Image (cartoon, rainbow, N blue to C red; front, side):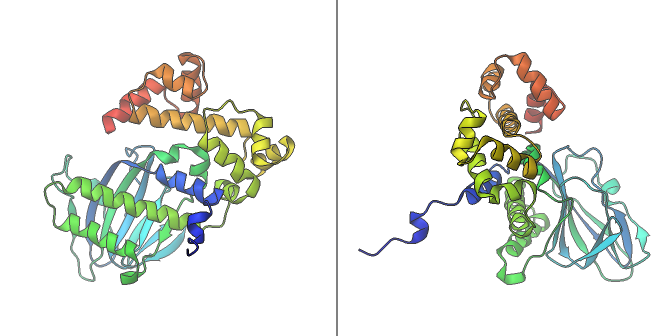
Length: 324
């Protein structure tokens, strides 16, 4: 009998499992998209609007270019098929040519709700650029170590016909151009897939730091995988150090150096993040979620959750359920 492929025998490494877990939790809970088509020389302040949700990540997809994005005085050329994302809403400019007129697509949008994705035209002499602009809401950014691994600017170039992401972008544009009944959920799912791939490519090519460096560390990755796989376990520092195959002092030092936190604080943050997920996705009683997060009373859980997320868990559940 032939030997089975090695990939079917060996379990995936801890770093791969942790990255897969992180990406699996990336779910778009809301989005907003519109299209604008300027011509000639133009500039717009593309900083995400202050009314956007806190966990939203702004993006621009260049359906027909080129144009440029300017961040902290540095310009980057965006070609057709390029994607620019701004996880923290960092102020930036978008434009074409030099010294062009100022346009305000965000301010020119019609009142919501929109029966279809709005397209704004800005005619002028010169070449036309087409940009799909908006934001996606991603609850995964609520986990601080994951959020800290993201840069303020992500630039992804799609590779033309050989790159499947370029085909996904083309289909997104088609859904905008040719709206059909039920097209909203399709557009949202396509955007989710594209956003997942953007994050994966970013994590695979970025210089490891913070959480990305931690999951590549052989000792820390074992500790993190143990905490992620069994967050409800009664963990203590000695038990976690044994699972990671190191001493308590060495484990504490590695957490401090790469993650800027302690093992038990990381566990607390992970449990609270899972509690935030449960508040949004389930109707579990508050005390059940509090107990699962390691708190004996609702009051203690409410205090800890409010410190972490800036809002009480009951209000979090109410507002997130309304957005969903």
